[in-house]
Image 1 (cartoon, rainbow, N blue to C red):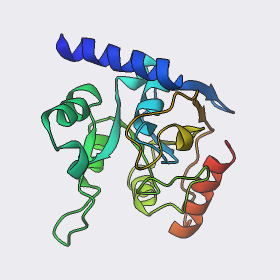
Image 2 (image 1 turned 135 degrees about the vertical axis):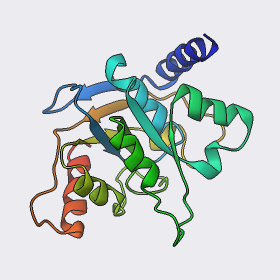
Image 3 (image 1 turned 30 degrees about the vertical axis):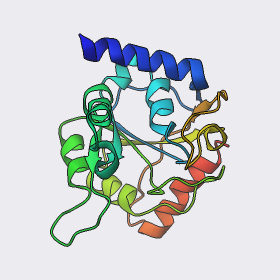
Image 4 (image 1 turned 180 degrees about the vertical axis):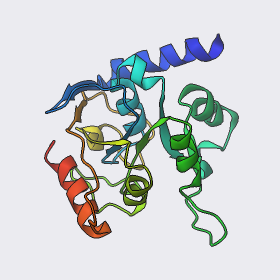
Amino acid sequence: MLTHVTRLVMIGLVRLLIGANPRWVDAAPNLSQSIYFTNHTSHLDTWALWVALPAQIRAKTRPVAAKDYWSKGLIKRFIALKILNAVLIDREVSRHADPLAPLIEALDAGDSLIIFPEGTRKAQAEPSDFKGGLYHLAEAFPQVKLIPVYLDTLHRSMPKGSILPVPIICTVRFGAAVSLQQQERKKEFLARARSAVLRLI
């Protein structure tokens, strides 16, 4: 009960603060298992995209988040695990652990994901080059839809280093799904996926 009420309160606060208004461009909401990949400029990015999804899709969509940040402290951990049902990953690369393993486990279980292919926040409107994780997931799960998303204005609402957000209306633009082409190289695919996000600006 507490989790449900807290979730509703957080959704209401996000909508009040930044709107998180969804706009589907050449696409429509779809219940199919998906990976939503987007630019990353703010602590609010996860909330904006998650809240913009229709409730039925949101219920089975898990944001991917850094374990070293979201597992610190009871409140952060409660929000990450109980409210967002996030997939927590290690940002430190280890020879003995696959950083994509928790994402693969979630996709195997039928969940959809929200990921940030840049890997870290950048205080700019355009996304930086994508890292290879999206390619490896697309290769391993060809049946999962890859949905580009652009989060507008959040780089001005709560950029890296900010403590409190500035209320600015954010539009969440969803584009048409992309897919990994046969024999497409990683660099080419990642450039094409980034271009799909850029087209939504």
